[in-house]
Amino acid sequence: MAEMVIKKKRPKNLDLPTIRLPLPGILSILHRISGISIFLLLPFLLWLLQGSLSSPEAFAVVKGILGHPLVKVVALGLVWFYMHHFCAGIRYLFLDLHKGVDLESARLSSKVVFVVSIALTLIVGAKVLW
Amino acid sequence: MVNRLLVGAHYGLKDWIIQRATAILMAVYTVLFLVVVVIVGPDSFDAWRGVFAHGFMKFATFLFFLSVFYHAWIGVRDIWMDYIKPDGLRLLLMIATVAVLVGYAGWAVQILWRM
Image (cartoon, chains in turn red, brown):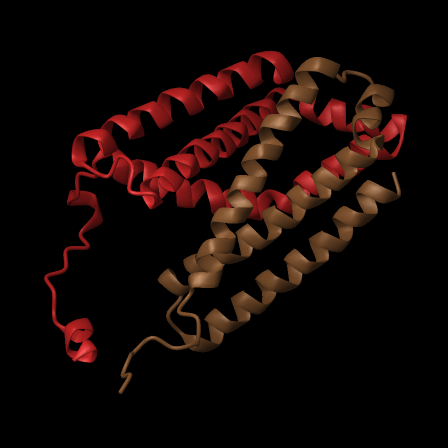
């Protein structure tokens, strides 16, 4: 019985450019993109932490790398990815508890996630990077 | 008679819970870390090193790293399962993911306890 239900043919639309993704959908795919990006950058981040903690000279090198304007822009993007993953993740925890699952709340909470994560990114950027 | 298409004994429940448990640990550490940075304002090498010299901070940071690595394993594995269809390639990517994450865990120990 279960097999029949799972194998039932369902209509499928995967024409990505014509799909207008709603805000919770954009939040969702960004959650995935930010996650895989942080995963791919882990060795670089560990390397930076190692350098910053190993010696005053290496600390200065790390500070120099983070002082480069191009690196600052990438770092700000990474901070946004982290904050987005953080905020969207908390939203998912609430959804797991069946809080805010109706359409209106889900749309509102997505907006809150974007506003809060971008605000946190700007604060970190202003305090740490610039 | 049980006749399910899904394979494995736990049907992913264990991973589902670990993904969320590690998320909460990481979220708490993130807040803790930001508070410490705001209070200490570590702009010199000695101040920055001082943050991680404390035993509790080493423990918390190590727990954070382990959470990141386990959480990353579940998330990245989901991505491979969603997009990589050939079994051999998928298995290869999963093994590579575990390999690098286990290596990172060893590296994190080295960073925190040999600094």
